[in-house]
Image (cartoon, rainbow, N blue to C red; front, top):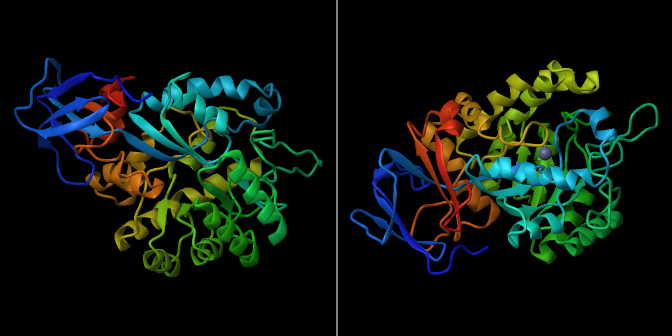
Length: 405
Ligand SMILES: [Zn+2]
């Protein structure tokens, strides 16, 4: 939906956090045809939305969600009918939108049909950029093989979602081409083990440099960027060296990896909340392998420390949560964890707006409150930097100038 054509209104009397990191300033926002027409004081229109006492933020951007996933309880997943996940995604997208998140990058699971259903206005949700499948090696992060011989893929392949396990440069070439054909906006690869995979170690590198080189070359030929699930330092360095656009998680970042990211301009998407969600689910009795719970416990502290060091060094950090591992709608919990890791409050909101838009390559369209941008806007009462209260302080959410929450 491209907003309400012809509709013109002004959000009047509020403060504007423009997304650049500058402090909020008193300003009105004039919206016309779904876009921001002007920002300044004394703006007028026939229709006025009173924003007195509120702060107007750019619609936030979660750079790492899985809308086709609703938790990591293995038994619940095994018993869920295949098509149920599509219907659950409708509720998941709604819950994310209600957080003031108007754009997401789905880091694996959602196919072109989900993205198109949102774009066509068939269902409400944040606009989507999608990875579709998560490429990883045999025995790696996307190979959900258990010692019984049973596999419990969270994302089974289907006509819109190509096979995700990949070994060797030639197969990598095929997999990337399949994903481009299926409509992927970004290629997601796993260059290290992970937390929720039963048979690997997040500190170990996965996929070899020759496989990564083919992946990056094929993605570049198709004009799509590459994002790397990368937790251990060797896998992070392999990914940065190969030329990925973003490191996801970055749990065991060392100083050399941080220097390499700075030199290459690589973005970092922390997802600090993800291991907390795994621990919460396990505590609530979810069927999650002990080895997965142990890994989640192992990474919480070291992760926070790594993200703090990366932020202090000046690595560009973009907001991402891994929602789907935990409940969609709980996404803003990440903001407080970023603050606790050492980011200044304004830097946290910048990570969730303008920097996230830059990572996704949509910064000409969203991520800041300025004329010409889409009117993706969030009205927040109270202190916008009070992150634990932010979700309940949201008064209204606009996407393309249309009120959606
Ligand atoms: Zn993820």
